[in-house]
Amino acid sequence: MSNEGTLSGLYPFLHGKTQDPAKLQTALLHSVAEKARDSRETNEAFFGGQAEILVAAARTLADVYSSGGQLFSMGNGGSSCDASHVAVEFVHPVTAGRPALAATNLVADLAMISAVGNDLGFDHVFVRQLVAHARKGDALIGISTSGNSQNLIAAFVKAKEMGVATIGLAGGDGGKMKSSGAVDHCLIVPSTSIHRIQECHVAAYHIMWDLVHTLLADDRGSAARKEKVQ
Image (cartoon, rainbow, N blue to C red; front, side, top):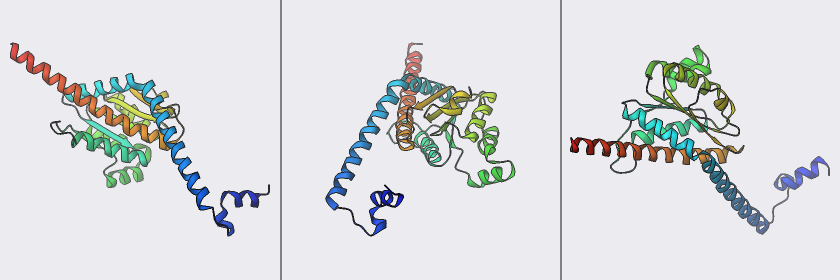
C-alpha cells in the first residue's frame, strides 16, 4: 500500500472521507475498555510488587514528621502538578480530624525557578531551594515518569549529602532515579505509558499520605497511653 493509501486509511477525514458513525462508536468504546483494562493491570502489577516499599516510605516520612521535620516535593511538567498535589494533601488534609503537616512544593516559585535556571541552569532549580530551606531530618519526594530528570537527580544527591530522606516515584526501569543510589525508597511503575505511570503515582502518594497519618495517630495513641500509665 502506498503512503497516501496508508494515510487515507488512518486519517480518512483528511482526504474528504467521513467515518462510519456506528463503526467509530464501536471503536471508541473498545478503546475505553482496553485502556481501562490496561490501567487496572498496571495498577495491580505496581502495588503487587511495590507495597512493601510504599509502607517503608510512609514509615520514613512519619518518622520525619514525628521528629519535627517537613516534606519537600518536586517534579517537571505533569509531574510538577503531582508535586503540588502532594504538598496540598499534607498541608490541607481532606479527612476531618487529621492534622496539617508541613510540606513545601519546590515547583511553586516561578520567579525562583526562572532566576536559578537563567543564572545557573535548569539542573539547579531544586538544589538551590533545597540548600536554602531543607535541614537534616527533613524529607524530599521527587516524581518523574522516566526517572531520568536530571534536576531531580541532582536534588536527590544533594539531599543525601544533607541528611534528608529521599522518596522517588518513577516508571519504566526506574532510570537514573534508581541507579543513582540517592533515593532511599524508589517506587517504580512497570510501564512505559506515561498515562498509566501517572495514574499509579497519584494512587501511590494518596495511599502514602493515608499511611503516614495512620502511623502518626498510632504514635500519638502510644504516647498518650504511656503518659496515663506513668
